[in-house]
Length: 232
Ligand code: ADP
Ligand code: ADP
Image (cartoon, rainbow, N blue to C red):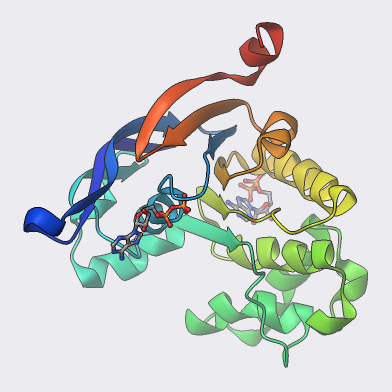
């Protein structure tokens, strides 16, 4: 589970200070897909960077399974980052590495033995439905398949949180639907907390259990999708 508590991010200081996130509060339970949806400029990428610990919040906390990660030293932060897997709009794969080699990267950095890594990569590619594409290079895969490789790589270190930062933006509706199905499977099978950040409300309605609307750095409304669909 991840909770975001009074999260505030201010860029600059004095008269030129910009409040980009203004006291956000929400939690994503284990086995839940929570969407944050908002227009361009709302603060979505800043939120994503605070959640995956690339940016430090100006104040407030990012708490994963009871531990406040926003207060950790740089050294401890490197380890803490493993708890959060991130997938981006651009799949971020290395073009000169096969699907399997891309998924293996985080394991290599961690010094996992090649034999262990092979087993784990096979398991991960199977989980995202790409066992038959292990030896393909990114340019030989569709956009949706590349995004699945990105998901397998994000799961390599067994995170408890999966952060999706516009991961379906730019995919065609069919590929988006397949990523949506996969995320729901992962939610159910791996007890992940999935934070799904996007500007696409139609995808939110397909994928999320709950949603918060982000506008000008504030959450203006939030609720469960079933309730939204009942009283639109
Ligand atoms: P979104 O991802 O929803 O489009 P962003 O998080 O990229 O929103 O940006 C939200 C606001 O924060 C924008 O007004 C943007 O100009 C501002 N912003 C983002 N990063 C910085 C920065 N490093 N310094 C100053 N302002 C920033
Ligand atoms: P077990 O605890 O017996 O490994 P799980 O149901 O937790 O059973 O996991 C089933 C499979 O999924 C295992 O192969 C495990 O390595 C993998 N797995 C579990 N959690 C995660 C996670 N957060 N990310 C990626 N893979 C995971």
